[in-house]
Length: 255
Image (cartoon, rainbow, N blue to C red; front, side, top):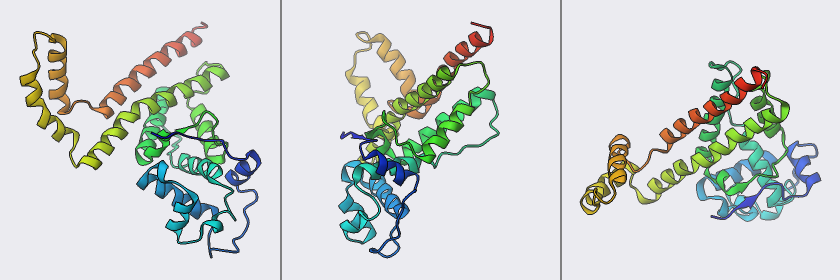
């Protein structure tokens, strides 16, 4: 899988584009705008993957000449940053979430999970140098409010948000791969398991692999598949929140 990197564009141009501080009216391409270009680029990446993304491919989708895009977007690096910031704006940010800080963090994690499923190409972007746009900053502000005032230091608040985001990033990969496998093979996970499980049962010696036979059988019967990424995500999320709760309680107790 090809990895792209955010933050590779010219800093001044990227930030001007992200914050729309210097958008110029189009002289070519009719009503072409940054927003139209970015939306078309996201559609290309959603449908064909990030490897298919290029200025030429976006121009084709818009029905304009490639050079007309450069009136609005300096290059692919800056375009990718704005694509990221745009989809970050899709996550819901309700003010009233039940369950205290745990409920708020769980809601953030589930929204992020859903975002990756809508835009699987996000898994191909390394964001250690994030696009510093308005949607990313607004999202970060909202996430920090989830743990504000519960006894953590500022650095611990940032670390908790990073921990939750990193967990979702790792956990969602299995769900994305399962969805892509079903799409490309025409066979669901349940259908694949039902086709393979009887043969595995005959081939595998349960005396040689007693734990694998016992646990694998129980899990397979429960999931009707080799795995259940959504269920694994929820299980891991609750265990992650349990760990964060230990830290919160220790801080509230003066530890």
